[in-house]
Length: 337
Image (tube, rainbow, N blue to C red; front, top):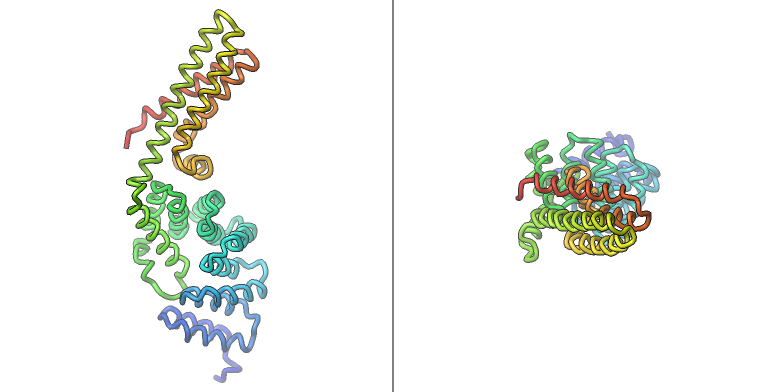
């Protein structure tokens, strides 16, 4: 069979085989032959981008990925290669825009969601990355790569408890995942990259002088936030209710001061928990809804006390007492780790 009559699939198969053997230059040569016949062959351009990524040639990967995306607009795979190449080149803003495009193209595509999540995590876009990673797990709960990406995103956000659980689930689904960082080739390119990144993050967390156990630090921080915030609001609400029996005006004035004090207490302890509103609470709503609702209840209590100061009806006080009491019970009933 002459080169002119050989099918494109033959070139692609040989290139993939060579890449899996770590012979990236030869794989790129096979693809170059095919692209010489058809410069707009999108699968060949996409594989060429992945071969360059595997070989550590980010600039060449970006050129091939850009050509693939132009040849096949609206296809996810070339965009993933482009996003990974941009991340390797530390062009994070462009990588994040590419990830946004991937998310738009594949709202129900697990590969698109987890790939965009990994790109966004590398681009330091935490909340969007976490949302996309969770979406990838929801769409493909039995796919180890989905859990691996969730673990990677969580580790970048220093949500180490979540990262450990996600990685454990990925290992349960694919026991060989622990050796993925030693693979070569393009078939498991993303899996290898994610496993390497997660390993580096885990090592950095373990040796960080500022973190003995960040998962426990976060857990303790949330516990203090709920206990001290709820305790303040509960005592203040009872005092406001007692004052109301003698003087409604005095009670409402004291309520305004107490609401401000409660807000300051909540703010003080919330500031000690990194990424509380941007990452931890959204994650807790999926993994530990009871604790998440306790935190929200404590945050709402000063607002309810202030509402009483404004309107004078007792119902906000009743709601504040109920919310804080339930929040404290939720924390007291949890084992201390």
